[in-house]
Amino acid sequence: MKTLPRFFYERDPVRVAKDLLGKTLVRRLDHEILSGRIVETEAYIENDIASKTQARRKLFSQLAFVGSGRTFIYMVHGNWLLNIIAHPKGSIGGVLIRALEPIKGIETMLQNRNVKDIHDLTNGPGKLTEAFAITKDLNDTDVINRNSELVINEEKRENFEIGSSHRIGVKRDLPQELRFFIKGNKFVSKSS
DNA sequence: AGGAAGATCTACT
DNA sequence: GTAGATCTTCCTA
Image 1: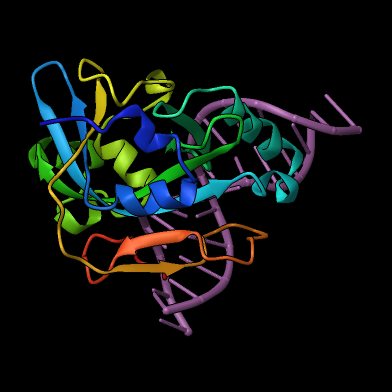
Image 2: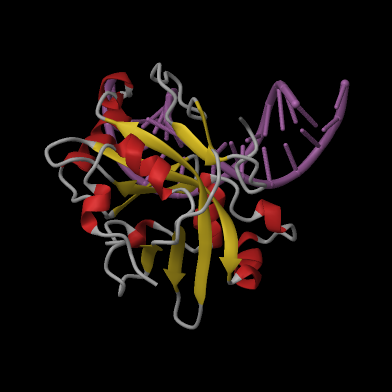
């Protein structure tokens, strides 16, 4: 199992958001491995800075100073949101992981989430962080380093169609569609 | 002190 | 399916 190379993340966030679909997010716990297939992402790009509130703007501008291929985790409405920093050098941008398809450690995820339905485990940005026990502690984790507690593995090319839409919940979204998901996948977050 | 935030849960028409 | 309460952090006053 191989992690993606650094240069994979040093590209246009939109490209990275699309290319992350089908890859595997792996969480290493003390006695267990949790993993899931990425089925939904959103790109956040340099132009977002202009449309963000003061608070968001400040938070987001950090992306410029953090290296690509690292996590950027922040709290919204009581939920931790997992982003992967991704942008060409000198630019700003990141990819929000919005939904996963559970692969390994499902029992533990069910416990973490306190639900019974597998489809309710990781089909939302706040849900998957809870299932994977991801908190601020994992902020600035290098997902390229295979020793990290959180990594993203490359998978062999699959055949699936990529759907797109406007981003969810964004007050003043940009004109272009920046949300991407695997068409027909049951673990994509509900609203579309 | 107060409000707002790229969400989720619950309890209903 | 939809509305309303509630989640925790960080910002502005």
